[in-house]
Image (cartoon, rainbow, N blue to C red; front, side, top):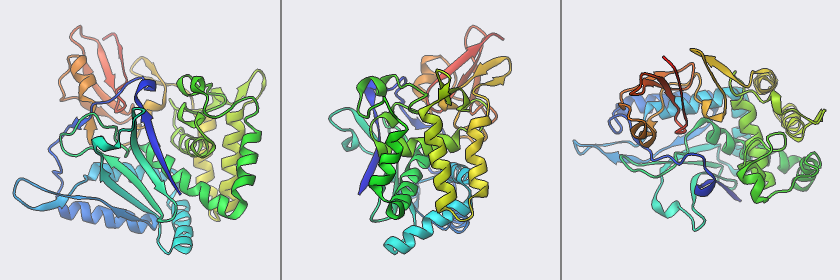
Length: 344
């Protein structure tokens, strides 16, 4: 069974035109290989990536250290212990441990509905596919973001649970806390009730709801992304709160060394929903790169529309690039293409 994460163009607030912000594949092959080996040992996983021919005619890895660092940081939220246990389950089930496989996206991955395939999880092969643009390619959504990585890991965890707990039983339990909300509702996808679904994509189906809740729970463990404002509705416990609790409970049931993972996950409840940065108050899932090293790609279309130089300063504590507009106002541009400004 395969589940793919797609972004559908009409429903996105911002559609990125991604281009390289640094020289393509500038990291040395030995550094990429060493970092790959470190992460494979740390998490008990396989990492695969394509190779490309550089200007000297040499075959080099088609990913960078920045992408491997993003993978590491995202998986650390779930914890090495929990990822190793999930991977070990797939080793036992499929005779192949969990594989994070990077591959180049192409125009053929844009469906008739305008959906752009970012990533996918293949149950029988234990593979998490992460699709990335090649070189100066543009118009493609990158599948190696923190939320997307953990979304696909969420699918892997879901099927680890359902193989033992029963798919129908888990789905029925999940849907029972979503009373009054239905999947496939176009209005919910376009403008989701955040007390019911953590994202519009979560409103499409049970597997996507589970994977999104898993991902947002771990990624929202920092101020600026906290989910506590969505935990109640009209004075009652919200469906999102119940779904988060369900994921937390499953972690305690199916991960033997779950303590650290559970603690990380529960921080989404206590973390503030907004972050103060130099007088600006910011919030939203576009802050997912807080604490991460600079991503490989910059949203050059957004930067160009704002009239900014592409030579911006990466600000890890805000998860975005800082610069100045022509009127002197400061601006933060995020990897998602969102941006915000405030007076100097």
